[in-house]
Length: 88
Image (tube, rainbow, N blue to C red; front, top):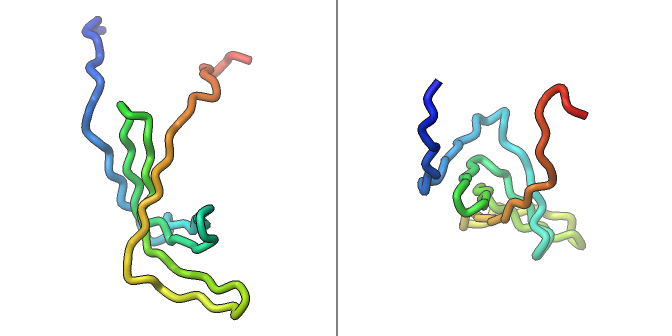
């Protein structure tokens, strides 16, 4: 086993979801929904970005329309706890 220190990666990880892995996320800012089909992880910056097709929702008229722009929702990660199997 090597004792070399692990260097932090400054590159983002891009994950393109398969159609059966896509999921909906409701935006907090306006209530619109996004069909997320891509996830970017910036481990060094502790950030995650969800990317997908944006649908505007009119809750009064009960209509949903596909927007021309894609949505990018950025999240900052926070460590809630650390554990290993067998602990606890």
